[in-house]
Image 1: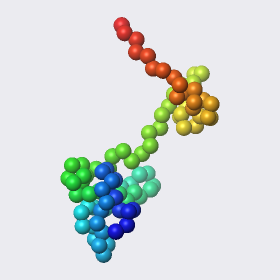
Image 2: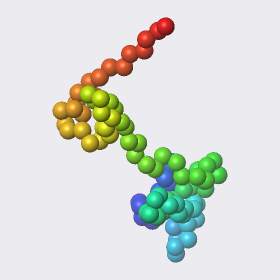
Image 3: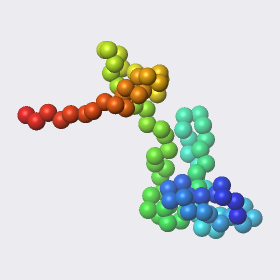
Image 4: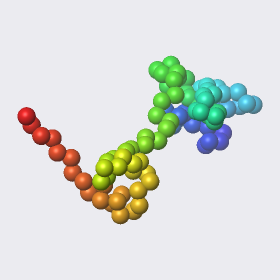
Amino acid sequence: MNGDYVCFDCKKELVIENEEIKNGKLLKYKDGDEDLFIYKCNECFEKNPALTNFRKIEVYSRVVGYIRPVQQWNKGKTLEYADRKEFVVDN
């Protein structure tokens, strides 16, 4: 068995013999123009057959009037953003 065959959700190793998945399923999804091939064990597939949480979240923040993706910031601005504190104002 190869360690590359793990459930996307729970990371349990899947048993594959002669190209047959014994304890899971191979699922194909479209993400724009890209085809994604995802393995799910039978237990996780029964709970939720859909693919979730496969994209990185793109975070935006307003800096000096501009809304920009945080991933495009330089190292200094990224460190400053990490130091920010959030406040909740009670009415």
